[in-house]
Image 1 (spheres, rainbow, N blue to C red):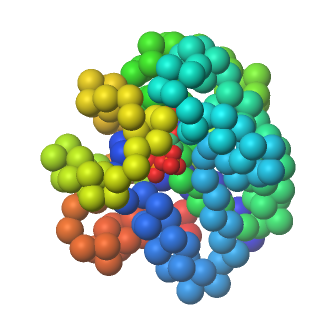
Image 2 (cartoon, rainbow, N blue to C red; image 1 turned 135 degrees about the horizontal axis):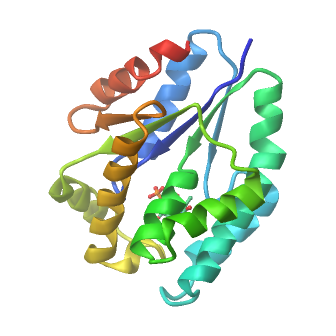
Length: 205
Ligand code: TYD
């Protein structure tokens, strides 16, 4: 059996984490071994870096330092968690991955897309997902969900212009790589969204 590496991406408040859990259950019901993980984090070293990235003042890190920390966390996560799981035939579902660094640090943070790809080449040997599911919502809906959740972390606190840029960057990435990406309408009931996500994986099953 062949392991698959699936990532979920999107702006803030699109329901990725909920959907990742639901998708994992649906795939387990088909007899697959599923590893659920997230970034930044997913291995002990990367979880330690997560604290550095998500806590503290918005301006705690320069955009470049921030990009390096995300890449360092990812390098550890890929080597210690993702690759070993894939090697034993498990499917790995990951909440955010490289494309978040491209959209957030590369585009919105101004570090540049090519610089982020170079860091990924060094840190993780350019390792890419088999499929990336981009969850999309009308911006007003995502903002409402976030307001009701409260307690913004360091990244969420970056402001509307930054987050609008992130959403546009994801859409452009999906258009540029139609083989790897599927754009998923994240509106409506959770059950419907999970169904759409599963449909976007049928060719890999
Ligand atoms: P998290 O609490 O996991 O948020 P979410 O539910 O939105 O995924 O926090 C992760 C935050 O880090 C989120 O704001 C996106 C940001 N991020 C980056 O800026 N670059 C990255 O490479 C990754 C993986 C995440």
